[in-house]
Length: 303
Ligand SMILES: [Zn+2]
Ligand SMILES: [Zn+2]
Image (cartoon, rainbow, N blue to C red; front, side, top):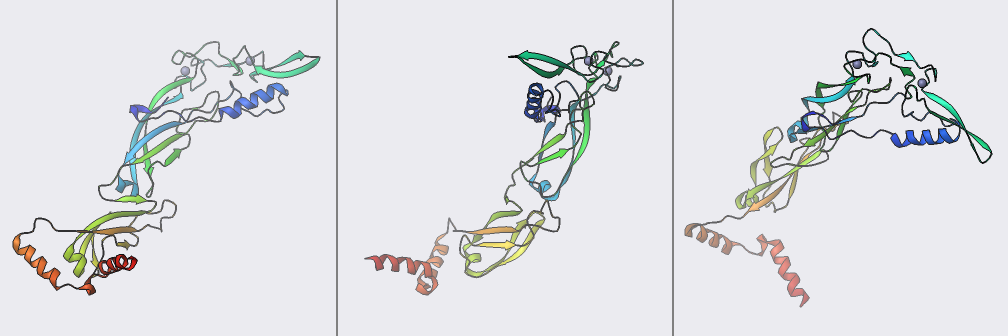
């Protein structure tokens, strides 16, 4: 009973374990623990799972997706009663419509009372003399349903949205299950996401990192200009406040964009460029390379 078009991933279990426990305890103690779901009484419809794949940007800003899935519904001919149009299901005369019969069993000199589903009506409390031809008296049918799902801004990969009552219709007057949308967020070409913050790497040239520069930094809403200070080291992180993902819980709150710079060492230099680099290197002293100086001081200090 999964969703249509290969999108579904099967129903989610209800509280069947609890219902069975109620039956067992009810059977042992004469119904004192009643309230557990009767196996053949009103049954809630199954939940239906449906997977939706969206882009990184759609997750950040929200999106509406039209989906189509198949669900179990009440038979349109008999409106779920199971009785042919023009006829009615009648109240079971054996159990008087309760769907259950009392039994007394003697074990070791004790009389154990229990309740069991009524055989005459299979626990439904109703008997159909003239079953509906379309659903053969089951009252249930299948339909393909179209829905527009609003996926809120800030949703993250693997999160679920439950649409109450859009799952399979219930049996014997039970409520419908839910449609559970499982959201899959596709990766972005450059951004990674961590909660409401996003991050990326930005490569700088040696000259940009050394001299400082106004660079272009990508955001989810286009590039912005940013001033990198003089003497920026590789691995330094900068933060653009409020350029991350909006909080799904608080629309006033938005995460940050953190970009980390790398420095690209130029390759394929010609003779003229190499000579210029050598001349530049010769002009540098310890004062220009604090880390380099400290590193070798540590080595000689250990000897
Ligand atoms: Zn029917
Ligand atoms: Zn009955």
